[in-house]
Image (cartoon, rainbow, N blue to C red; front, side, top):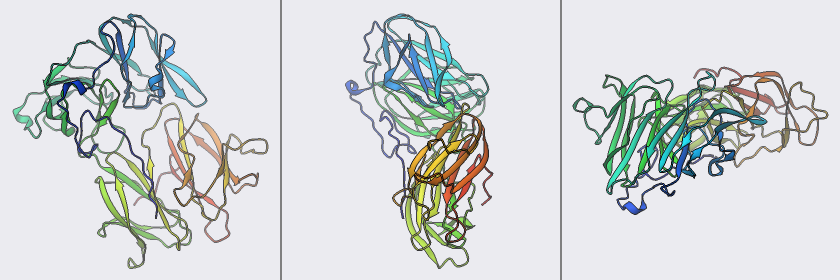
Length: 465
């Protein structure tokens, strides 16, 4: 069997039990992350905190910040040094086919100051705006860590923010701050060490976000933004920590993973998918069946795929997978029953207001390499394929990746590579901005039959478990 996965590098300025397997705590002040710009410069960084916005480019005085093109949600640039002056600063959204200016303002930037510009609000709701947090550039006191907290989650109410020693009872503490949306604290210095950040509705001790234990290194200068949670779990926020060199994201310590299953083995019966020889994740999944996502604890699992009618017939035995907190996965059984494969695919849960996101997989072992056309009317005679020579691969399923398309009507046509012979044609598909669409090309119902599509996400409502 094969498992495909993805790793995300996180800056080692702090750690969370769910994001980092170990902690980095460095008490040597001269190794701390600090702005390296001259004290006379104006120092600018940008935090992408708009949950439904696409990736963006930042343009200052007509010059892109080249260190961080395609800035994604919950990401931040490093400090950018610039001569004091008044500049036009633009945020350009990366849209299908072109970029568009979505936000422009002209602040007066003063020397020896730092400016964190947060792009906040919703593109879809027309509330995108810039929130500027300005501070004087000063060093962090030796042995301390400095932090500033911003409420940048548009759907979250007014909140109390607690920063305490780990496992301190909140009933014995006062909140560090009470913040409404767009509110922020001043810069606060505390001794380096272990801390826990918890967020509650204002006036309540009911915790809606819990960081778990964080190790904060001496000399670190952090801006911590509570942003809208767009991954798994019930917490309304996750924290984006801008370090001066980049950023990292902290999820609630109890954030689960999510997984669904797709049965794409044409000659296999309905199957059960069982974790750790005890937990039935999915029961009686038929060929072309797709389940809804279910929440599971992050961690390592051994997966069995067994015949639904007789669990003693195990076609995949103890396949090892690792599920990461905040991640969403599709487990797809494919190939033939004799050579059955299990692929673990990472899905994206974040929808973008400016485009439809479409991803197509080649999961038909009986079909040779294919060309994939995406057209307005299905006419492909004089059109080049959008994706050419896509194979069925046993190392990892070949896919298009998430492709952003403008909202509209499309026809997806699949042909054997180098031909215009239609193996699959979808008919007209109406794709909406702000939706995610997934399709798997799989074998026909019987040997020799034409391939077909399993359509998921925005195409159709998945079947219940």
